[in-house]
Length: 152
Image 1 (cartoon, rainbow, N blue to C red):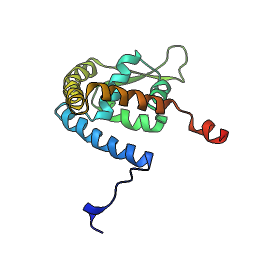
Image 2: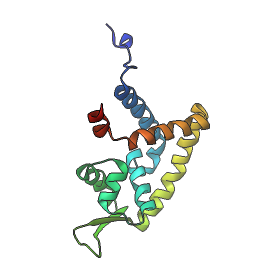
Image 3: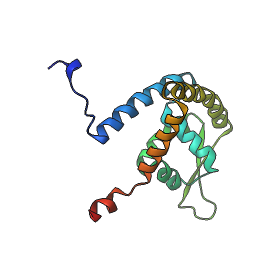
């Protein structure tokens, strides 16, 4: 069987979602490339921006990441001076994150590129279908598969 003739795993929800996510991720990464950011980094900068100095635990929960994965993704953003971490003033065990002035400028630059990607995606897919897709994926992200699996 040649590589071109391999069937897609369209009956597997996970494989289909990951395949689409890789394609869409590459699309956004390519358009964001002039900013020097990957789509994941842009999303993290945006989450920090809207979170108003969020705790790392809150970011991890919002993005459905474990803290070590979040730390790994944050490292280059800290290194490049876009974000800084600091201890919470009321509980020093809690680490918070904020954008630096350089990070706010980078987010603004990248948001213009992201808008281009978003517009192209919606042109190809359709605005209504894109909105429905985001809604469906948000709903899936909110599901509790552990509880649902034990109830069956």
